Amino acid sequence: MYKILVVDDEPNVSIGIRDFLLASDLRILSVETALNGFEAVDYLRMDQFDLVLTDIQMSRMSGIELMETIYLEQPNLPVIVISAHEEFDFAKKSLRLGARDYLVKPVEEEELLRVVQSVLSEKEEIGRQSLERSIQEHGQHSSELARRREILMELLTERGLSKQEHDELVTELGKELKGPYFGVISVRLDFSQGGFSQREVTYQERKLLKFAALNLFEESLTEWNGLTLNGFGNELIGIIQLSEQPLNGQYHALQSQLHLIGQLVSVNFKQYLNVDATIGMSSLRADKTLLSRLMEEAQMTAEWRKLHPEQQVFYYEDVAAQDSLNMVGWMEKVEDCVQLLKGGDEAQLEGHVRELVSLLKELGHTDELKASYFGMLVYRIYGLLLEYGRGNGASQRRFDPDVYFREMPAEAKVDELASYIEAACRSLRDLARERDRTILDQIMSYIQMQFRNPALKIQDIAGEIHFSAAYLRYLFKRETKRSVWDYVTELRIEEAKFLLATTDKKRYEIASEVGYESPEHFSRIFKRYTGVSPAEYRKG
Image (tube, rainbow, N blue to C red; front, side):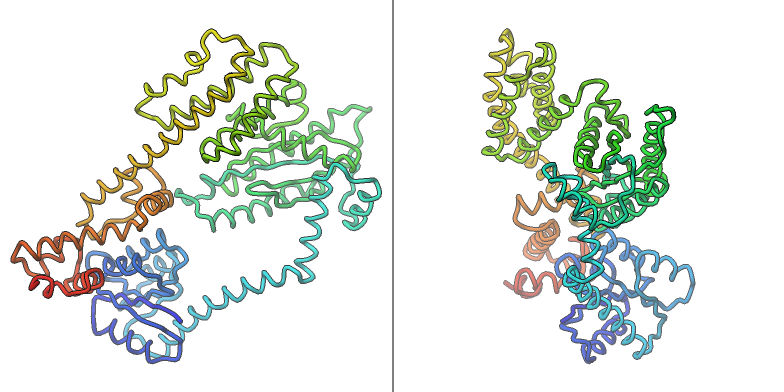
């Protein structure tokens, strides 16, 4: 059963559409009507709708502005535009904002029914296709693709394959592994600023970007008989195959090809998708049984970005030449420790810290390198504490490694490391609570000043505190057990109750004063929250 919202500043139009749709055979549960965009936004924030029909030209908030708000807050909600104008610019802009159709008043009932039925049917079809895709994962084509990925992942990740198992997998793969020289590329995509929209990338957009990136990756490796597949998270994996023989036995000819490939892939991602990527390139080997080792090389090499954030393409031969792969591995463990600190999983953190201490004690390098490893860890933790305690760095002074470990010999520092991290974890937990509380206070303070503004948007609040809208919603819900818009409405209703009880202002004056465009809409919201009408509340 469907819920529909009709928005039009002519009540006879919205009511007529409502009655017509409810009388149809479209399995419509309810149809709400709003006289303007502000009322519509209130409804959309309080309830879930399957479709919005809106006029374009309305006072205060136009249909275009309403669509922009919907696009930002509920991008998957379908909209049908109804307008008294046939101008192409109106139609073009509404369609650009995602309108499913554009109808011109007076709307013929048959046409309205056809368009609404089409959009609702499309919604049903999307759900049905999603279900079918899940079922068809076992179908032939999907099964073949899934099996191909499974074979490649086994070849790339299983170090313990016997020769027979390896040969069987290669045989099942067919003629795709030609060689004779093989290399592996690990690509880590950064979607924080992906695409060209100049705004936060949504989860759905990240999925589309990754799909586009995989296709572009495959095209980029065509000349080198590339095999590509999705890794986990935002990773793409590629196998390159070079057929050239080394000139006069010189390996550098193949290495130059490797450098060309790495730079080409990086440039293509940036140029065509506006996506930054970290690219780790393995060495080249004339032995397909070494693919798993090459995979490890590529992934470890990509970790070098943590030491050189200004660089994007990294080559195993360059990294190995500096004898620093152990450093890369240590950096990875340091970052794992930081993530555990942020997550607050003390049991898992305790085990990880024991591993770090053990590694430091067993490190067979020079004292200088051991001190470097130790410093990388403790200063990374201290930096995290300063970040969380921003504006109150003095309170974290005791965690400054120069202070905490002052005059301790090297071995004593390592022995004290677990206590240092345990204390840092407790402090970090307190700082996180304090930070979130401060952010929440800022959110609530801003809303308390702005709730009377009918045009208040989630983006306005997010911009004030310099956090994403998604994090704002999450934090507010977690800390207050209600949504941002529930809080806005509660403030408006409480203010209205105060004005009804202490003044002689008329209903339309109070409605306008607390942020509602129409007295009728104000009355509906008021009764929904209090159980009585404004007049009944005033009587007492």
